[in-house]
Image (cartoon, rainbow, N blue to C red; front, top):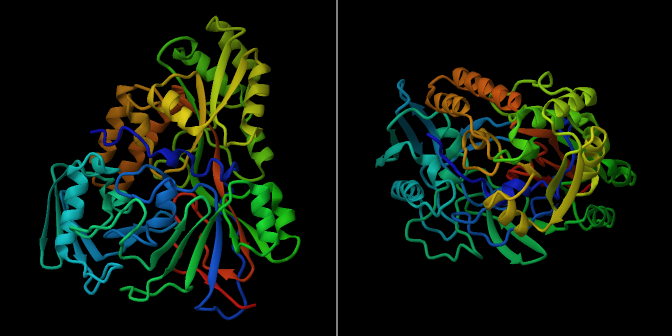
Length: 502
């Protein structure tokens, strides 16, 4: 019942160059703008990772989801930053007691950006085409859906078996509604139903949205949003100080004093599902031994990452605190270099030499801490910093690595630990069965409990290590309100964004 064999490429990295921080509880509140909101305002937002193209149907990458979902494209349902599922193109929905029938009531009067009306037939076509087109991202997330039909404004999805993840999946790419027969060039243009329209893409520089004045719902509060792609944090700080950007996402919490010193910005910390993941190649060699993997975990001082990166909380299992099934698993692998040395000796793996493959857009802080921690227990770690295309080919596709680090940003992605073909190389039938049971559960609490049980096994197997749960670190102008601060590396719903004159 495994649904997906690959995460989207930049779901791995969207926060990589973005935030190397950890999560900070509930975070800090955004400033409250005191001036009168200007409906004609333009807001400049610094982002880090620019998409390679705009085809959200087929192109991997959280860089697309971050800006296009909710703002330009919509589904029957959406989700809040706090991960609550809410209505979108559907005004409401019901689920049968047996979990096999989902009925959505489609809003009337919805139009696409090109002026064409949204019809129930468009919804049926979009979901059916997604399900039947493997080249479209997340098509497998609709695998349990046996039929998609329309009866007037009601859209009915029938399932072969219950799927507790279906509603959640419909809040993402799997649920995006497109116009049947659309001739738009999705690589460079867009035709959605959202509160913003794509206006201009200056490749290598910026993407501009403008308010959709014909939006079917509450109109956006600003006339324009410009996403400025500035990879370097110091350059982003300079742009903020110079008044060139109004919001800085993916920021460095250690630069709090510098960005706040003029009084025009406040640094906001919010929760996220970003998981700083250290993967172990378990197919052969010393890392096939659970004792060696456990030793590496217990050699790592997770608090050091939080302290060095300026925000957050540690994470000791595959599920972050925002996701169902979260449990504090710090008891499974506490920092204990002596225990690590004993495990390495027991496994006859003393004087171990390993290679860490890491994309080169990450700051050196992470490998420095890992090299130091592992050296303390007799493990020599060689760092190979590579461009992302090399990482994708060598690690993600060919599984040619010892250790690897990337920041996995996607929410509710435990499925990767239940997939033996994934680059994590972890294969535990008990975990796979618990995950399948969780999907089949019709009770949310039961589904979460099953995930928690599976996650503890994953952690006890030392299937990987989770160095930190990354925070959303956002510098917000004091004249800006309504800026999301939770999980901003995954989704940025800007419908309530405002900019005041003072």
